[in-house]
Length: 124
Image (cartoon, helix red, strand yellow):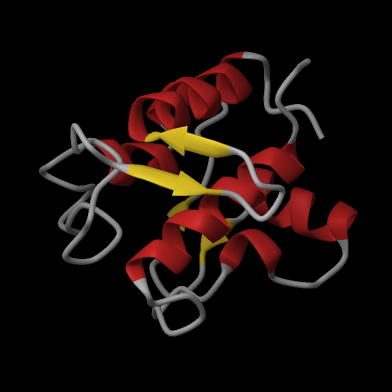
């Protein structure tokens, strides 16, 4: 089954929850800005990270999208540190989260899932 935006939302929710900072980050829960799936999808795929001014998705090079690179690059993005702040990071060998649908994913599986979604032009 193809990865869709709601899968990405579940993953980002789980990452934020594991970090214990859901809702308190300066950018907020930007993958759920409006509470309306269609509007959230549009905001996520065409907008900027709130309070940071960085495009969320790079349409020219989707796998280089800021929201993904900041999760996997130990150097962060454009002066911002790797997220979530102070970890744990999805790049850790023992990282895993359980989504609200009960599915457990390792950091490697998260990276593969996001890469798949981005490479497939981020289906809704």
